[in-house]
Length: 430
Image (tube, rainbow, N blue to C red; front, side, top):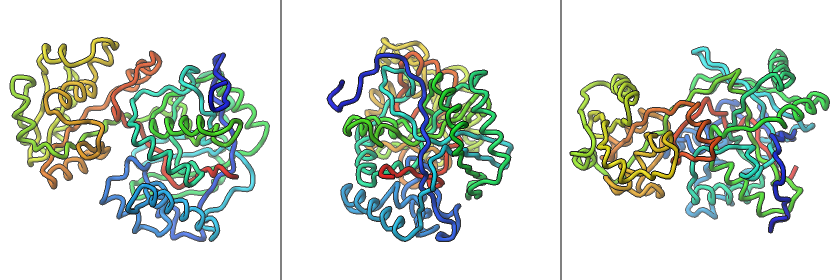
């Protein structure tokens, strides 16, 4: 047994997805379900997006996942107080029976994603059940853990993927069959995505899903910090107990492939002219007098031949590629697989940030991670800082590294579509 009373992993275990009694908004008590949802906490562009969501509805979930107050302690207490008040007022209500939730997302371009939301057993890294592929920032994990301790709730699911096969036929059939029934809720958010949710409570169906998923492992697509938070909190609390599980959305990417997009960087204290000047003799830099879409196409073409980045913030775009091989050999750690050493994110963090620009990558005061490309460029131009626009990594590269136990630099990928926050929560005291 370890210090927290949890049995050490002695044999390979698979995914253990457990039903739970979901906490959901009462549609009669809010303006609209769309108005109370939010992107995941780390996708919200602050402060603009945060203010927009707060003003969309007084009960928007952002008041729980990103509470605003003068100190971290006050923020977490405010979130806990808000959650208790919404429960007392009936704004949030608990479903009568435990179940797994089938969740569907569809956009206007033909993308369709379906998966299962449940409480997943929090496994130890040695079990190789849930595979991370990115490093995490300890201060973010500490922040999320403090919020979960205060609220006693999993406020939003993380996104996991698994590779379905003949052994998951019953799970696949259950998801597809359930989506033919009337949903618990249906709403369209302002990003154009249509969301539907169903609850599956039949004991026989739940048992079949549990048995099938127990043969599989999952890759973290989105939510590395939340998974690390789950593991932190599990180690703190006696087992068995509610902290043994965490809220997840599990998607079969054989049937529903995810989109993989890049996460961009905003370097707060580095003007573009200084960033470009420091690259002389180290990378090739070409100024592009083209709009964003064409410039991103040029980045994609350059990324096909090697490491490439797009700098913005001064009204133009600067394509950065063809790094000096000697510089890379001196700055990129050689004790990792080649697939890791040649990642754009590796070169950015190990070479550009650490040795060329001397920008610490572990402090929000120096660097921000933003998913939206136009928002990154706009903020850089407004602040006089440098936007570093990235090209996405292929999913097969991510999975290959994760299976080798090799993590990528933090915020290397953005899998999507991400589940909307606010459709179903998990209270740990229910």
